[in-house]
Length: 332
Ligand code: NDP
Picture 1 (tube, rainbow, N blue to C red):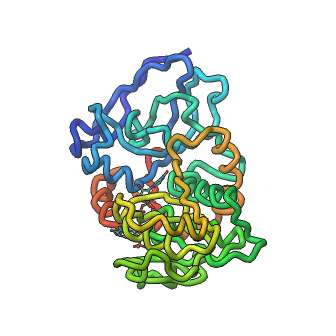
Picture 2 (cartoon, rainbow, N blue to C red; picture 1 turned 60 degrees about the horizontal axis):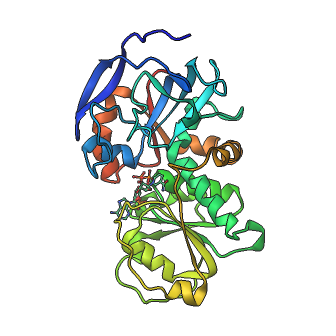
Picture 3 (cartoon, helix red, strand yellow; picture 1 turned 135 degrees about the horizontal axis):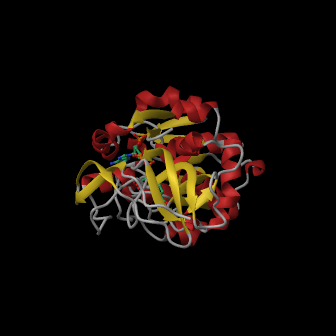
């Protein structure tokens, strides 16, 4: 049984890069849909792109951005996601092709929501968010390609270390027994990155500029949020048989370098796609996130902001000025 929605407050984009807060009326639920009371959302790099109209990620307007959110199911036409369930939504092009989390309530396909395990609240789920889920997914990819903390591997490199994916990767890798090395453009954050679990901190400049096709075998694996020239450099520095989980493009989308790391050292380049990641993988990884990422360290990387602060945060995230995870309090 569904009822027509009363208007709810949302951040509504009317055209590319332009929008403001408005009262919106949500669609009536059809089979398979759920309505979620949104407790928290976040701002990710991709949200910054959508809010500022960079990269034309959104084609249909009006649009409600917000690529992830968490809250409680308040109406349901999906038996697998009953009323009262606490859920998290990441990926599936929510906030791009579909309306997202910058709204007090949202209607979506129930299959886009994951029921939260008992060890994570909606607020903690947004401390994790797309970035933390992606960090867990990247480690899962590395481990499936052979990485094993018990085999005493060389250090694991994490680029874009002070960002959302980077900080969550540091916390997770150290909790799982690895020795992550943080690469950052913000050397003044070194102590903070070490407190999160970085075994060591390297300046971004160490991995910029042109290198040799093969350099000294230094890293037992890598999680790369930066891409571009940095990805080319770190591929050339990977140990034999090691893998790079390519996550992001904060530093550029081109891929430079040679095929020599693949041919002469058997290096693996693993693409990480948290957007279309299968539900079974989400159900497997969220409890692991609850065990290894949720806790005091997650709280130290999380800053909480009012709904009204969102537009201003978009510039900051695109400029790489946000440290860790920025969560948005919508309707806690
Ligand atoms: P953030 O903005 O939080 O972090 C990115 C970090 O990269 C910054 O904090 C900064 O770290 C570094 N950085 C920023 N600009 C540059 C630059 N020009 N050159 C080198 N380093 C730079 O973003 P997220 O962590 O949320 O996301 C990181 C990337 O991963 C983005 O490209 C995002 O789109 C992508 N992503 C991909 C996903 C997937 O499924 N594949 C899912 C989630 C995100 P520092 O100052 O420490 O160097």
